[in-house]
Length: 118
Image 1 (cartoon, rainbow, N blue to C red):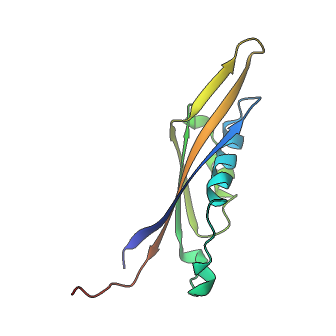
Image 2: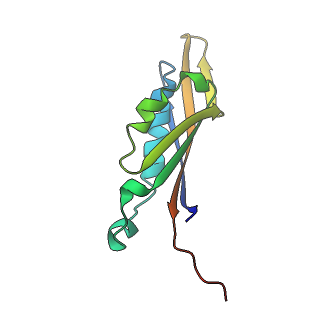
């Protein structure tokens, strides 16, 4: 069976001081997860370990995101995390600081039984 996307949640997170892209990414994922209550997992008896969870993080400096740290925050499934160019950096030139804003897209895919065509 081919896995189908059944959930797409979006979130934003930030690190207001210090320019920590990983912290902003983790907060963006947490924001996305807090928009979802997947009660169907228990209701339908689905094995949550079999879900494919694909996370995309958008930040201005993707190479500064520790994707393993982001992955460790997800409670279920087979997780992949990638960081891409996106988000927003807001510089504070007076203090030599930067605020980092990250965007997260969390997609859940599962293999679903094929339905007969009518």
